[in-house]
Image (cartoon, rainbow, N blue to C red):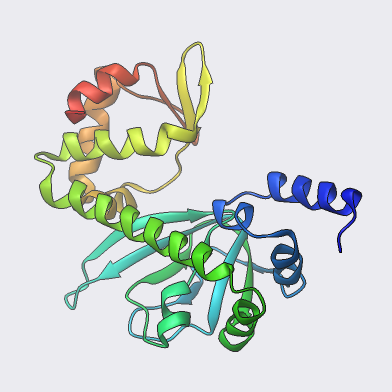
Length: 236
């Protein structure tokens, strides 16, 4: 039985650790899962897993960022999302024992912990309440993928798609007197893979946004002076 001090300490760890997945775990489940984590540093461009292959297990993003994409047979790529610290990848394949539908590639230097499939299934067996947490996490990942596909397939123009993307990324940005700021260091080609547009179209659209003062760049930091103006362009 946990003492009040132990419960308080675990709650503090849950509050400090990013990711809704970990915040929903019971203290005993969180402690058990963390005992299996041995993060390794991955460099940009390294693949965690790819489409049509079965991942070794789940991948916990401890720090850094990982882009998840789907690819066509002719080499076209659509980025579905960028996983950040606290997110868990590979859950669907671990539960189904089927190949992954996405490719996970490290975007920035990242610390990733891998927990093998058998280990994770045994962990879930020890903590049956984790099944509900996993179901909620998979539902959220499905929702994010659907929203991204909706943006690409149903939004009208490239400016509208890009405006929607920037608004989404800025949701957790830093609010300042000059506007909302967030890190933005993707290449124009990678941005194009998010909205289904060419690199040239992205370059031209961003240039227009800057001339209209819808965005401003400060090195790798992008600033949105007025979300209202960008929302009007995005049609939201």
